[in-house]
Length: 148
Image 1 (cartoon, rainbow, N blue to C red):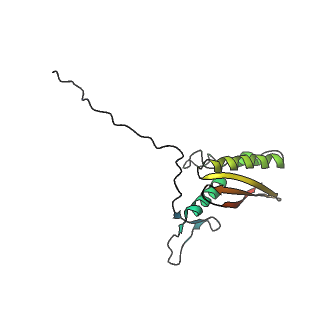
Image 2: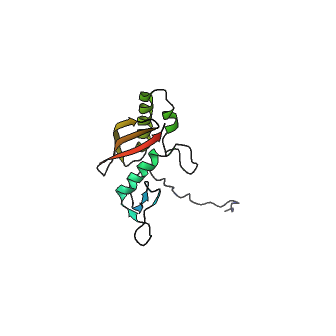
Image 3: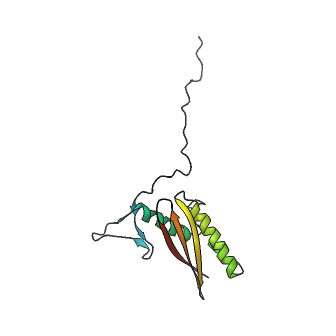
């Protein structure tokens, strides 16, 4: 039998992880959005958040981030807030914000629904509150503010 110039071998089976696997949220470090820094305990060590708190932090981060602004984030992270706020009427702005916030949060497989949007206009800001429900958690009302 003649030897071949190129080696012959069996190709291993490659498995690709399924997209959108619904794994439980793992504890993480707690980021305090009001302070703009990580929460520290009495010995100045970062505190751990529960899976629920981690999910809520992700939701807050998403609605405060402009999509495609930061190269470190995928295009799934953030909202199209600037284009929503540039609409001509208050009703159009509210509709666009409701759409982009809902779409941004529904990317996460843990989000069951986003609804009950309320808008409060002031001279220089738009306050938005809405209800978000994670599949394994209760409904939570989140609030955010955008400069107009």
